Image (cartoon, rainbow, N blue to C red; front, side, top):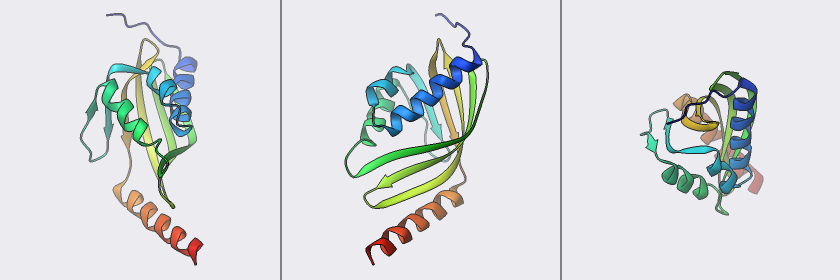
Length: 140
């Protein structure tokens, strides 16, 4: 198994391309940037293992009533490790849930092998309440 070192600049570009492709619903591009044995972990949720499973979840975010958006506030890398500070936006119909996320990405051979997102559950719940209220007020 090869484990070439990725430059920090290339690693940042890969993670940025991955997040932007996911937000643009370009699942083919996003899927090409992850390894077949990727491990994706989100706070308080079980780890999702395998490129096929991750691609399936990303494809689910590309349905008409569901979506994903991202605003990257800070991104830094040290070799194959990339840290992100960002706001993720989950869309469910007319409701947008915005919440702060700190993500760690580990690359292997230029592709994402580990995707570990950390977020505060209370911030997520606050984003849900705000999203629902905005949706209701827009309809009024």
